[in-house]
Image (cartoon, rainbow, N blue to C red; front, side):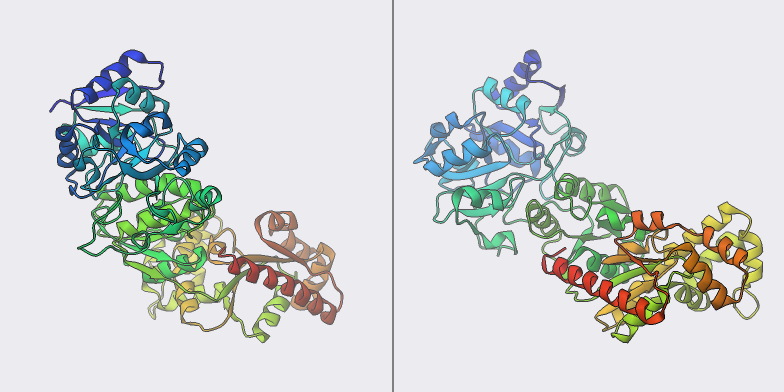
Length: 550
């Protein structure tokens, strides 16, 4: 079949819109853009055209389709006993990512509804597609324009990949703004029931309708004998070729879990904040861990792009169920066939940094006396130099044989290579930062301590702060630090000052850390009491954030 390509940027391009609409009127298949995902459209009243949708997608015929209309005035053409709630929702959310399940009229074929006496109705928020539907004069049945079971298409090129030569036309209307399919609400039952979370959050529906129940198929796999009442309920959906495991729980806890469980060569889908923790893996960013809109826009692209790689398994972080996170979570879990790992986590991980002489040791001592596990990142790195073959191999590959005949690192030899050569020093830092998070996560996972402190001079620069629930910089006035260093190390004032000024200043720490503790007290007891008070405040904030699921 010859597939036509239509690039239509505006509803005013009448000649192109008429040509596209003509495909629908004559019973052809036309891929159309919407704000959610691309749809594979046909005349929803033409049984033969609808049959071709199932054939092109390889879609089970008991999986119902949604009718797309240009406005709410078309509802009573195809729906019987339309409740007032439908018009209230349409007034509030149409055009938009909302599908309403209503009683169908006899003119809607059972093939379109998967044999059901109900039909899903939607008015898409894409001016070009609404213009095409209105020009065609028929409601358009349009499931997502992908091969059945694969991740949905959020741009026309993805549609080309799946459908070129199988359908009559593809309308390129740009990238989809929402990125996940419409929310489906069943208005034929009391209370109304959510059948599929999507681009309109459940919270918004409840604000209009009051009580809304959630069908159990949203959160668990349907049994083989059950009949789906809406698209996406029953079958394994949105799945790439590789197997998927979804990791739920707080974002930082799930990132630490991934570091200790993914196999070599596995693909990873993670929130942006953690992408740099997985060198050596193909990583796709889902969006910021609090940016649900970006997560919805990226989830299908992240899943689809693994199909062009040799990855055989994918691990994915999962957002919480608030707002659009409910839809993103649902799509990921469907892609995984509900193969999920929940990471319960009561541990608080605190990253601690600061310049020499600021008093960081005092904070660490207070934490340790209160049962915290303190991981000195520099000490862990030096232990790894003796035992971690992956780290040793990476150093050897970059800098040659810098280990002596007993296998110990020849520090002087390595120092002669990297010190004085900024590019080689950056390379050594990159190797350490590549391997250290994995080892730290393993040690954290083995600990039962309620609090873990990561002590690192380069906590921020190394990316280790991504593992931490919060970061604290301990600072002090320059003159205080000078006196402390002189007394502690027995050095001159000039040398102490030069060491301090070679490090990051207070402004940098303030801009890059969550909390600052200014340790400017002259006596040890005063300093400890100040740090205790500040830690109590920080812990209260952390506990509140954890209770709110952050």
